[in-house]
Picture 1 (tube, rainbow, N blue to C red):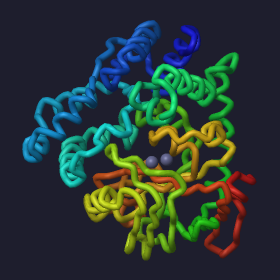
Picture 2 (cartoon, helix red, strand yellow):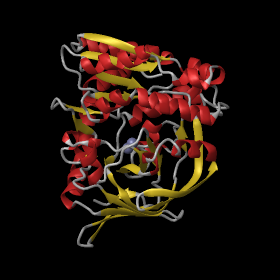
Picture 3 (cartoon, helix red, strand yellow):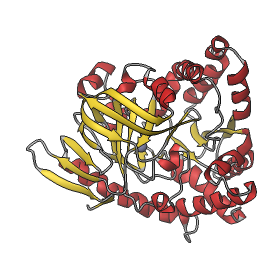
Picture 4 (tube, rainbow, N blue to C red):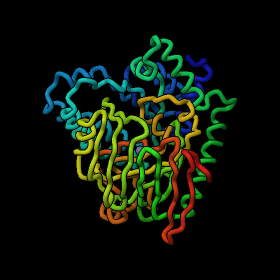
Length: 410
Ligand code: ZN
Ligand code: ZN
């Protein structure tokens, strides 16, 4: 367990560096019932810092599992109107959002993957407006994580649950820079380093990024027209900065949806809807997955890739070095927020409109033309092995080495 003082600092980071809550603003905390304690600490901090009101959006993963096992597909796909209205309220009131992501990676173990995929599509459709509000930065939002029993047991299966939770807290403390004298200041420094690299990449305006590693990855990822490399802090549509992912180590942009060619293999397992997909390989031609295989979770991967047309194209390329605190911890967290910060990654599906210049002002058609992908899904998968080499290739054919053996050289 963290000291009370570090816990408070953690809550403060979420409210300040994360959501950048403003005095008089409404705050929504979105989390599972098993994270109640930390949610209340965030609520307390938010009120101390001048929140107008703190609203809770509780989830209950145990109930979700029971429903997935026992309710029929049609019922589960009929998303109640009141849940959509609740999300609309958050948009209308320009709430800032703080999510606590701490799900049990195995929560849907043994559930029908086809049913899961269908329910996931239905809920993605119902949440389309809300997702637009977050992905376009209309709302400021952040995600943080705290250990829970199910999650800690997945990460440290050989330890008793109390020990596993303690180990999780230890690693989260160092990853979140809570052991620094002034965690808020440490975060500001970290953010500055990431932004320096993003500026370098933007100044070069590469045509494509070429990734190779010994496992067989040899992939050219074309970049969208007028793409922007982003990191850490993003700009909300209201002109206020916020940090969506905490932790964050990545620098990311929009691939060109029609210019990705070659083969890519995963470097870490992908956990999707409680299913673990591993040992997979994807072949791209003209931006589209034309072939795939998986040693583990093939059906789950197939389910994911059948969501819609857009999911077969890429919506994100993100670069980060193997010496990030998360990668160095050597722990597989089975949680995207952490694992995506352990390794360079790509995402199936929707691209963030903010990853191209003036993306939020573009129509759907304009974004398509620039190569910005659209889909109901946005699912990250890790490709950054410890030996990955990465180059940026310019429109004149010039090459700039960005990564040697898994680490930045710029
Ligand atoms: Zn990412
Ligand atoms: Zn992503």
